[in-house]
Length: 237
Image (spheres, rainbow, N blue to C red):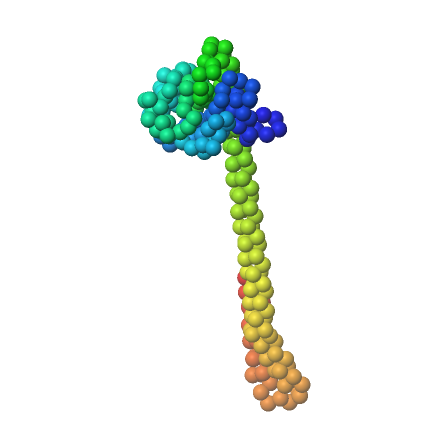
């Protein structure tokens, strides 16, 4: 649980086959659609079938959940015919429910394939304890997965917002640059021309006897006034 929590189910069934009476053991889990059971962990004679599944409505697992109790079955292939194609056949199987939040969401199977032994009340006690442990392990795995998903979602949101801030910063820099260019064009095209006109008018007044002195002064004063208005406008904008 502490060092490899995601391997706990496989370790659980391996322990049931190496240290217990079972020749095959597996964990079945009800899928999110509640229509089928999946087999995420399997050890022993049927180990090659890990990752398989079976229907919720017609299976030993479904019987356990419907009765909400451990079940002992002999040769279940006589009733659940799809087991007849799987070898070695089941001589006897003990199924223990495990619970999450008080609700059974899967089962633990322990199987013997020959008549070398039979399950007894001590096996039921041991497997019930293992079922309780499996329930705790499953809830911890759910919590770990939920935490992982939450962290991934948070990282994705941080990345999304960081990317948005980068785009906004780039847009602001473009707008600032465009504003600088616009102000520079306005200064050159309007205020610059007014000042040039004033300069030319003043230069023409160097001679005291300029024939159109009043007209030149009026033009210069008009350019000054326009320059003042343009300067105020640019400052305001």
